[in-house]
Length: 492
Ligand code: XIL
Image 1 (cartoon, protein in one colour):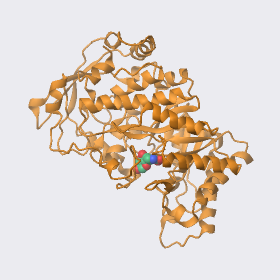
Image 2: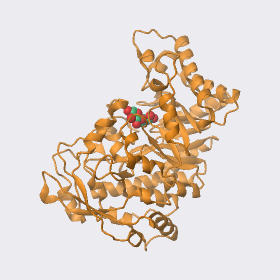
Image 3: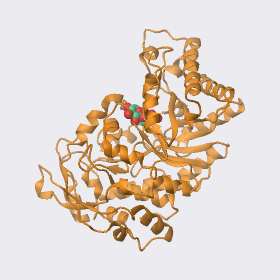
Image 4: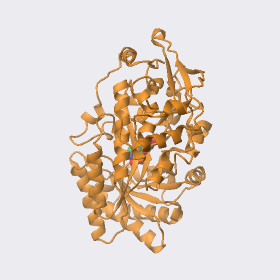
């Protein structure tokens, strides 16, 4: 039985280790066998109803939606850290069970066996983690999880490149946050075997790069590039509705079409020229389309003031800057709920064609892929959607992948999460012009999910059983991604 199988059968339910941020207690659910999970997985009266985010938004949404939540501020990371660190888990012992022998899948294809054993061959041990709950001590149990990821010498990025992709990457929210100071988190980010690309989760957004009109601040972005040395960087993003400086959003400013267009063009041109080829790509316009009705332009200050032409203006300015300076920087449109065929995806396809007809550069479409376990489009649906874009002559990238769960996790939802990660990665593998996969952070401790989607979490590939500033462990979806990258069939 593979390690991942052990996870998903509940024997290794690492998912149960994370204290769901926001819970009023420190219960962490651990199971040693499937039967005990359902009993221990309901430590509180916390609702187990399915995603309100999905059901409250649109008929087409599969995952991430703005409504009804607003983004937390950039500075919310410390809050996330402290809630997560409520976990009262402790690594009690390091059993010297051989990860290699445990990981040797006998029921899988040779591709899987090969990749999995490569990934685990230097993983020296499986650690036994005992979680003790203060309020439900009687349900405490022992579970076993993979050893630290930093020992891995063949990982997601290696496998992605072997599959013909440019990289497997991650977003991260540095500098100026708790994770930037977490040596265990940074060590895993630095692991080039897993991450060959980095996306700034916040620091290149408008409010940080142009905090005052015409006054550009590259300090944080430069720190990000330093942290990401040796990796490709997808620069994110130029024009979006959120994280705007007050000089743009100030309601007392009476923007006109002409004055706001000029501001937009100045921002786009200046950043594209300033960072030049250090940006593998820019997400030029982010999330221009609405979920309701799907595919209409979303109302925001840009659209409300300039109309749909703001998207064209942004791409025109970026295209002009790239061409005038002979840059290799790729220009992307990036959005969510365009990961499957439907009106929003069709709107993005129409945008690509419109820009092409205007001889404006557009190189690719970013498929954010913020999914909810069990509500994720199938591999076939994602592949068909990717192919609809690539048929237009542009690349696609899975730009912000995460698969969140309704808390608390169960054996069933954890298993579903593995399938969902697998399907997205496998769809990309199947499409030659899907050039890379990026997760929207890799460690539950610092995920944006709990702060944005109350009651949901546990969406990333790693966790820190003992909270911030302690070793990371791989979760089952990591292995689901690795299997997809090696072309192995999904085992579930
Ligand atoms: C998110 C960040 O992760 C958060 O820290 C911030 O508070 C809000 O923005 N789609 C995007 C990203 O394109 O820029 C968003 O990032 C997540 C959704």
